[in-house]
Length: 274
Ligand code: C5P
Image 1: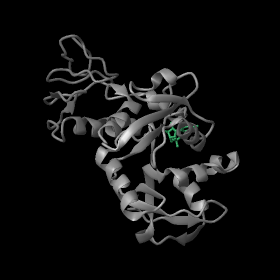
Image 2: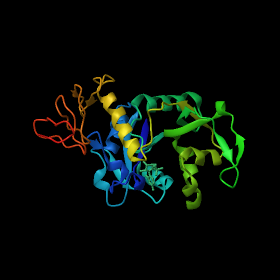
Image 3: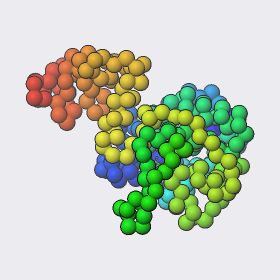
Image 4: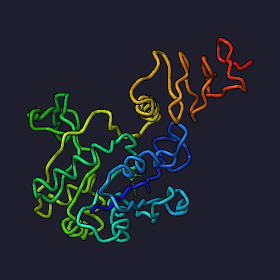
């Protein structure tokens, strides 16, 4: 059995939406709901705890438990873990990665069980050549051996005892952690990677939001999107058409810049509804 912790307590200022990033609408639903849906399809997950910003506990989807997050990401993980039921396996996932599939969660859990290690983390092989620069921030000091480099994502799956030990660190150490696996590494634990995919993007910028919307639309449609078309939440495809932010479909048609679809759906060339 496993409990899942979704950290969603970031303010997401780089997105410039004015509301917490995890609650920003993505293809018609709050971003957080897409991760919750995936986790609900994972048979071994018995409970989902969501860390949210203070004042936003009502953003916890039905059937999940909302807790107030901390000042840093790892403090949010610690707050969620303190509320979670007893279970040997703990999944930690960023709400900012709405495209993590049920299969990815299942693969990470299976690898933890198979290997007997302390943590398994989703990661992708690095495609770019990575260089390290000197203290001046510009002069190249080294070219890293690419075959050994992986870009790390979430989900990250842990043995509960190892995660509890790792999170019992001073606030300054937790603040320095950009992922929880590093906290395991620094306490001597064994961490393994499981291969993820490039589509499991982290939504940080408005561009990421649009890319995520496109990828989710494809998934909702079961991978079959009409050429030139997009998909409404629930899977309806607008043949040759597009979908307004928020999900409204113009039958057969386009969407006015800014996303407004007039009743009846027709949008005049150039974007104004008629
Ligand atoms: O800021 P960043 O995108 O790195 O955050 C990664 C994840 O951690 C996001 O899902 C965010 O909501 C969460 N987070 C949190 N508590 C914080 C900071 C970030 O739950 N104090």
